[in-house]
Length: 236
Image 1 (tube, helix red, strand yellow):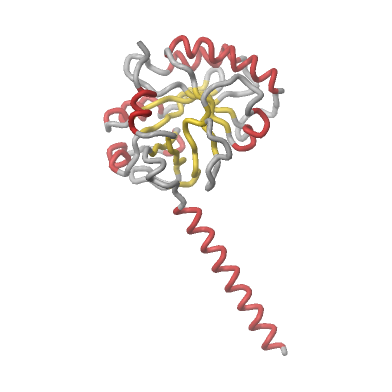
Image 2 (tube, rainbow, N blue to C red; image 1 turned 60 degrees about the vertical axis):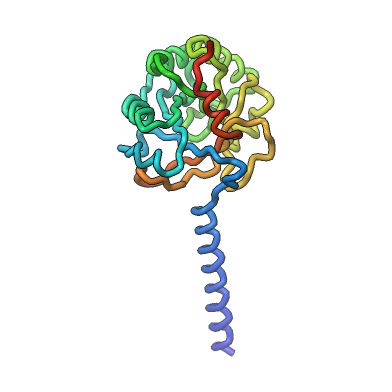
């Protein structure tokens, strides 16, 4: 009887290990249908360290959105280098701002505008709305809309195109449809967003790309290369 219990226990453990391994490999290898979403991209910050952008470009990556600023005074110290090297490698490039709930939107706009150059084509500016890494304050949708408007108005005037709002799953549940309306970049890991009004979809937060050491966020564009060209083009 004891031997039978041991064997059943070992068999159960083996099944659990197989399921866990299967889940891990599914997570690591997940990728949206390439026929439907042919344009791939990454978003990065100084956390990715030194990036070999030519190797990135050769690994089926067409665009990169790079962290520029955070709050009212923080500048990502890898932004300028990443922007220049990604552009030189032939990628469509853009910049994003991490929006803190504890600084006025107007101050944050000044920070972003002062850092991101506007002399060459860029993807639309992105404002990142998420709870992780933010200050403890949780504004109401009305409060956030007011501060976002104070950020978006000068930023969009400076860059000549509507901004894109990035929302994590949690932020989307709290704010989507209740804050200033803009094109969306949605984070929905391992499953397609349950809405279709998005421009970018971040489908992985621990992806691997040649030229980047360690994990990196993976994204797709809704649309083909022509859409990417339109987003990158300066408005006339």
